Length: 80
Image (cartoon, rainbow, N blue to C red; front, side):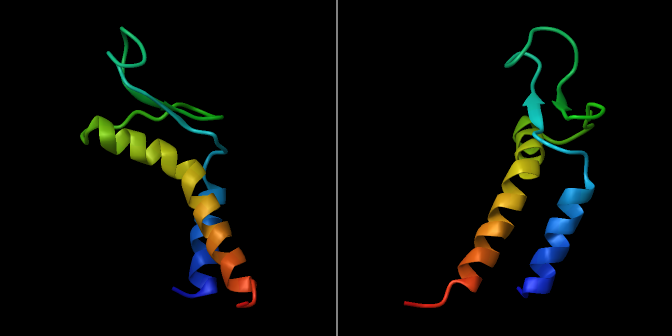
């Protein structure tokens, strides 16, 4: 994967609603209402998928920028 591809991934992430995103599952995090992803903007309701899918999507908003930054930083560090 090239640095340009990593930067494109990061740009897509940064274009999304700001984080952090948090997954709220009915029966796990609250007792009534729907399962949803809380964002800094409007909440996201997913249809279909599993609770694990929802947790992954919510976590990706925080995880992807950190992973891309770590990869770019590692590539910028000269081998010792």
